[in-house]
Length: 381
Image (cartoon, rainbow, N blue to C red; front, side, top):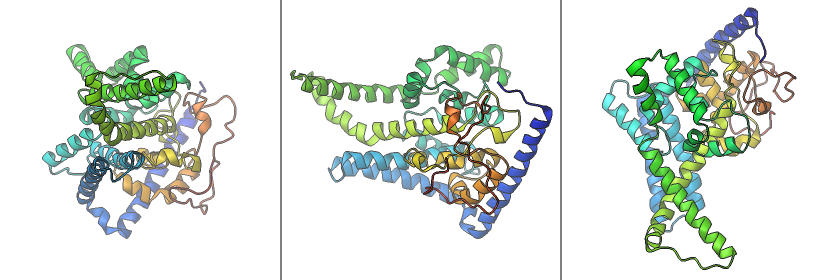
């Protein structure tokens, strides 16, 4: 691990402060240009109802054979990504602050539509903690998504399934929980209550989702293999009765959520740095992905790789707001040293530092080099 001097830390903190001020200035200019941004509750409720209605509508259309399976899966995954971003904004209480019943109803709704995610009230604690300790051993949210893990077969599977990320590394999960409890100074009964709450974060919907998803995958894999081998497929009566229901759920709920989660986990766990970031140096916490080859992944997490770094400096702006200012924001982020398209970090286990120069980090561009909003035609990498 590379060492850092006090001067280096102070410089990073200074750059972070400058960047935060610039992003707030850009954001306020957007507020003045678009008065509708003053109505965040109305916008949030519209996104919530519109996305939920679209997902239900796609399911109904598929049930009546009006749309093919692949269309329903892709479009549902996109609308689910909107609900995920909405949950993220809700965690920061950017909507319905004066209406607790509506706030909690929205939190419950986004969870029900995304059953393979953790309890949003638990995630709220994890995420706010993430902002305080990003890149450290106690960052249970990002480490839970495999941030900091070396690349290999195990990480590949963990990225596709949040529960596998728990099962395949029990000792790491134990260490995460201990670090998290230490950061919160939990001891005695509070430690055990907090640990149990965190361990059960996926309950009750997560295990049900996983059971149905793998049951469906196993049945179709068994059918395929037997067909290739010329063997008869003789399913039980239970399977015959359940398969049409499983197939419907797979297309409308299971596959869209699995696709969305895999894309989000891949992007989020790799744009965050881990292990050797300087304290309070927000510039070292994240990078920005704008390369064209990342667009297929970004489509199902609402361009998270391009805009999430903005959030680390200015948490008070919703996800659609960050997308609106991305072009101007990226320009000032480059000027202050935020890295762009540092894909070599994947070889470093998401560390910030490297023993050798990282050749594919986009160099800082002059202030006049404005960057096009997502999706970007040219590859920055």
